[in-house]
Amino acid sequence: MTERLSLPGALVQRLRGAQRWTVLTGAGISAESGVPTFRGAGGLWEGVRPEELASPEGFRTDPERVWRWYRHRRDLMRRVEPNAGHRAIARLESHVAAFCLVTQNVDGLHARAGSRRILELHGNILRSHCFAQCGAETPEDETAVVPRCRCGAPLRPSVVWFGERLPQGVFEESCREMQDCDVCLVVGTSGIVYPAASLPQVASVAGAALIEVNPEPTPLSSLCTAALRGPAAKLLPALLSEIGMDKEPVLPPGV
Ligand code: BJW
Ligand code: ZN
Image (tube, rainbow, N blue to C red):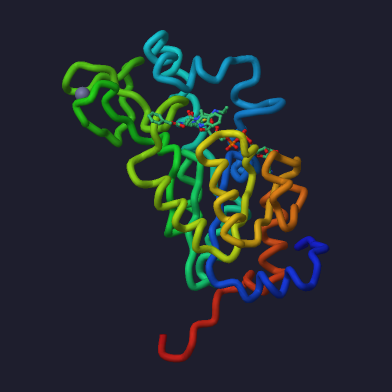
């Protein structure tokens, strides 16, 4: 059963008419697929200092531990499936004139759910590249405890660790999308990791409606036009149904 939301009528009208949408997602959108979030009880970082596993210093100190952790997560991510929240975002894209999904997630579930225009701010866990600067990239999952590049240096997962730059141009492109959108949906992120957390602020300052979907309040909540409190796999389909974007889009004759 699709849940009914209690959004103000004027906001529903505004969302129905909005043609330029951006979505920012974080780990919470994949929680209902069985991928743990980072922070909070039961999170991936419960009982560890994040920098030990997710920084260049942590990798230099104990590459075996870091690789064990990433291999465990890769194995998990290969077993899980996109959920109704990922699918709702893909459906939304097919209904509007301009759309951009900016994700902090490295699990690839949005692409598997059918989203097309995706900017991955923090990389992708299924790829690896050289930890030295030789530039080599590799898609395959090597089996050595610490896999090696052909230049002899260790390989590392192609994700963005603390203190590292985001992939070239991706943040700048995300900012442009946020500046130009009518609505920004912020789904399943704690909103504390920068520069990703600044993107909803860019959209808000540019005049967009900001809608948060998260069971918990976050530092971004105070900027929001509306906050939908609950799990994304339930509330995103409900939101789409409320604004008439839950069905296959009807294309004009001849298209
Ligand atoms: C649900 C749900 C359900 C649950 N439905 N919702 C400015 C101020 C302060 C610090 C900084 C700053 N600028 C930069 C920094 C430093 C740092 C930073 O932000 N630190 C803060 C934490 C203090 N940032 C960086 O270092 C970044 N780099 C950088 O700035 O470089 C600058 C530079 C310039 C020039 C030269 C060199 C460098 C890089 C940040 C990289 C982040 N990487 C990680 C790890 C990726 C790899 C991996 O996967 O292992 O990315 S950290 C981790 O956090 C991961 C996530 O993408 C990111 C965000 O987490 P997310 O997605 O929000 O998850 P959670 O767990 O925090 O929250 C889940 C949410 O879901 C919760 O709110 C739940 O309630 C909700 N939820 N169930 C909907 N069913
Ligand atoms: Zn190399």
